[in-house]
Structure formats: C-alpha cells, structure tokens
Length: 185
Image 1 (cartoon, helix red, strand yellow):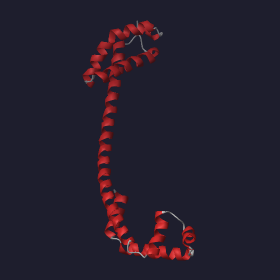
Image 2 (image 1 turned 120 degrees about the vertical axis):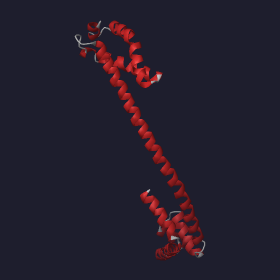
Image 3 (image 1 turned 180 degrees about the vertical axis):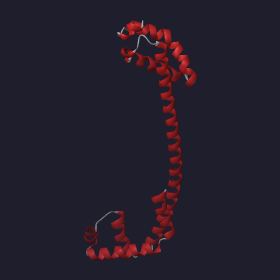
Image 4 (image 1 turned 90 degrees about the vertical axis):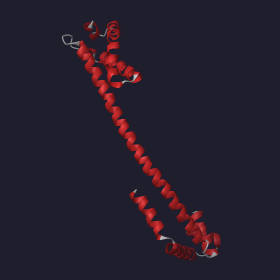
C-alpha cells in the first residue's frame, strides 16, 4: 500500500487515512486536549503525508514516519500558542499602561487647557482677536494683517507679547508633567 501511495495512488492514500486517522487523532489529543485543534492537526498531518509521499522510505516504518510528522506538527502548534499567549499578555500589559497614561494625559491636558483659557481672558481684546485668528483659525500673519487692516509687524508684536504672557503665567508643573509623560511613558 505504501508503494502505491508513493506513486500517487489516491485510493491507497484514502485507505491509509482510514487505517490511521483514529490512532493519529488519539495520539495528538493526548497533547492538545481539544477536539477542534486535534482535528486540524490530523488533517494537516495527512496533507503533509500526501505532499511528501515521494520521500517515504518503503523499507522504513511508515508508522514511525507518520507519528513523527504528527508529533512535530503538534509541537509546532503548541509553540505557536505559547508565543501567541505571551504576545497577548504583553499587549494587554502595554495597553493597561497606555490606558493609565491616556487618562493622566487627558486630565493634565484639560487642566492646562483650562489654565490657558483663563489667561486668554486676561488679554486685551485686540490681542485676543489676533491670537484666535492665528491659533484657532490658522491664519498667517499676512492674512490677519489684511483682515484687521493693520501691519504684519503689529500682528507679530501682538502674538509675541501674548505668547510671552502665556509662558510666564502657565503653571510650569503642568507643562513639565505633560512633557515627561509624553517623552518617557
């Protein structure tokens, strides 16, 4: 029967499959303890037998060949599962860190944003208008100057003084904490 299998006889393969599939199943099940995975391995083993049929040594034990393939395929699956489990555990731990950092970042961002809003309320109406056009609407110095009928230099001076005011009055602790979290966590 093995000689016919080597020659590609599908009937011989079918007979070998029916003769050994239950034994291979039991062998693999002892390692995996799961029907679905065991069935998948049994199918893979017989596919490998068919694909390597020309390499089968008719003078060696076919059973030894068959169960070696079954063992190696089972061990490969177990290694893959261990690697997947380790990867999932790592991803979960990283996600927990990022979730914690995200909450802290969001709180600090809200505090910083609130502080900036309070400081912006202390600006002169003209400084506030120029700041909003620049930072909120994204206009260039030239576009702001044209919109307000003032010089570009005036726009630049107002923005420089506004940013200087904000920098000097923002709580440096919030900035340092936000920077630390951004860079190191």
